[in-house]
Length: 458
Ligand SMILES: Cc1cc2nc3c(=O)[nH]c(=O)nc-3n(C[C@H](O)[C@H](O)[C@H](O)COP(=O)(O)OP(=O)(O)OC[C@H]3O[C@@H](n4cnc5c(N)ncnc54)[C@H](O)[C@@H]3O)c2cc1C
Image (cartoon, rainbow, N blue to C red; front, side, top):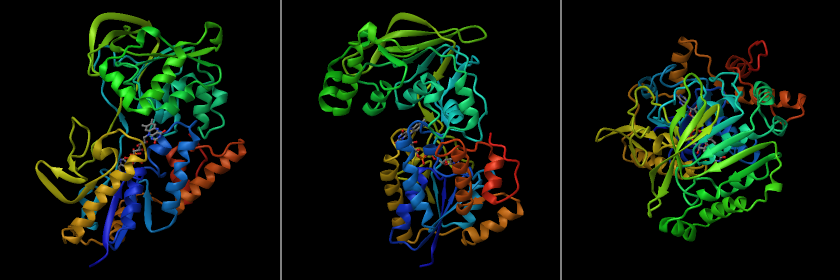
């Protein structure tokens, strides 16, 4: 059997794990990993908060996988615009879509389009130095609402509430460091629509909030309600119990313990119904919710207004479609069965999906590994059944390179990433930090390609 040429689109954890598992399968394969940015690692680099170095260290494991050299990284190539999916199919016998998620889920309430109503994904992309997002962020609000009770909501609340000097040990870019210094915030209100037994925080991330210097955590006794399903959830899940215990501990804080200059308030059983204000955000209107016995909630009609000057919506991420691939606009995933991409009822032979684009934007980095295994099992099965063949020459990057050169696409390589990484570490050393990220795409590209550049960092 000839060597199978496989293209993987997206160098986030899902794409890297899928490439790794495929490279260790019984197939004779050549794997090319395409990434639209000059940097690999997806949301581990551009989503995980910069003050979570332990999670960022997953990058070391991903680095070791790519460093081996049997998976070929090509950066700064957007599949869909630089090269179409159809073109890719000319050169590759199988294609895995691992493009993850980069946008915010919609929230349809009045006032959501006011200028200070922000999506968490945009804010995260700013503080993590994503090259395709604005370089400045308007941190002007003293009181802020964050909608959502998952770890992303906690990240957003923590980064907003933390004093800038407590972020400086991390890899944040210079423009973000500068932006955070002038943050006038005093109170961040995090809102969840269900009860303490239903919040989606993980215990470690919640506990961490309690250790942020000069930030108090405040919870409200009236938000602590439990129905039958809540009691059962606490009994059945150690994690739920730990989360509820942590939240409950904060109820018993003495007033004299609360001396910090900034506060994170965690409110539960409240759902946003309107963002208030004519031209600017002036407040949020929340409806008190009641548990229904099965863990679900229903509005009580009681409204509570909070004065805030900015709103961050952390109610979930959403994937974007790839030109030429089917997309379920409702679920925001590429429709698939166990990783085999479907158009209607038909399987598209040779096209696969993995990671957040496959099953939606939930789950930690680790879960993209089991996901990838399922997808690769399908590829192995299809290859062994003799189903996989490119539409054209099938000669992988050898053929594609000609097309990229014709279009003067300034793609980058693994060696290029090593150059950029060394450049970022050198910047960090100059500032007494491990690394300082380069945000400017042109500089990222030029450094990676060994070209002249003006050193613009953001
Ligand atoms: C704010 C935030 C914080 C998180 N924190 C944690 C945490 O602390 N711990 C944890 O375990 N998990 C965390 N997660 C979850 C974790 O990031 C995801 O589980 C994981 O990144 C999903 O992997 P993925 O590869 O499917 O998607 P992604 O990480 O999104 O990777 C997709 C890659 O595809 C690329 N791409 C997209 N479109 C194209 C295209 N057209 N052409 C070429 N390339 C393309 C993107 O640039 C990206 O590099 C967090 C997620 C978010 C959003």
